[in-house]
Length: 93
Length: 233
Image 1 (cartoon, each protein chain N blue to C red):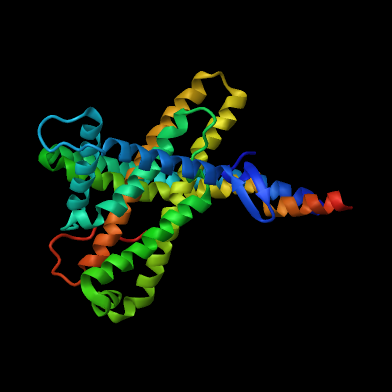
Image 2: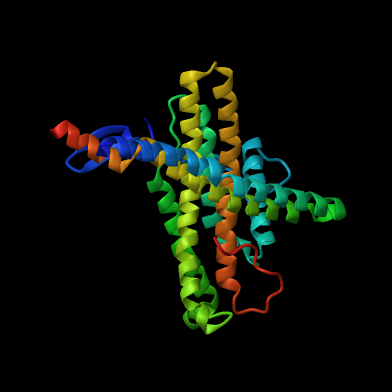
């Protein structure tokens, strides 16, 4: 396998695996966070403003982990520096 | 692949580029500032007021209430900065309904600039509130060993702010773009609605996180009345 093929295969496979496995953790964590928030809302409905706000802040923190994974996948597919370098080399030849 | 509005260049002279990010940022600034100026020209203090003034009052008082709930005791001092953050990001996301518009927050430059201004604002407000020594001492709390970790957490949460907003805005625009190529029209419309929702949520998150960081920076010397919420990135 030459350089170009190896870079392409590695980028594609890793891009798929990154988002595939990377969002499992945040998804489970968000599910637990929402479940706990719902329980505490049921127990104390008059604190709902604070609980909702804290829930959203926490969800954004967890979500940003998944966003990092998506970012890496998108970079690997669309803005891959190794691929661009190899393409420039082949075009230059 | 259209990744960011940075790539759409309208005019170039040497290394000075006028790209879509700058154009849309300035358009947003003009709309927000000019619109507010027009509405607040004849403010009325009584019960009779125009609809637009009512709208602005609702926006300002609810932002002020949110800032107070986060733990900042004098919300008026921070209202200008935090309110501007929220309004800019929210307006940038709302205007995606206009055809031909690309949200400037979909460019890492814009979000990095906003995150850097939060990074500068935290010590600014902290020193204003506690003095230089008091603020610098807050880095050594709870023990002296935590000093490098506190510094690292300052830097990493700034980076997280920038990347979170950029990732959300860029992925929203990109998903709509990809779906337009392969599916019937109803799916991109639904995804655009989802993008609007996440845009508003991200605007709220950005300003609330900035408020929480500022509250953590200005509160350290006082006795803890309420635990700091989620200070690490």
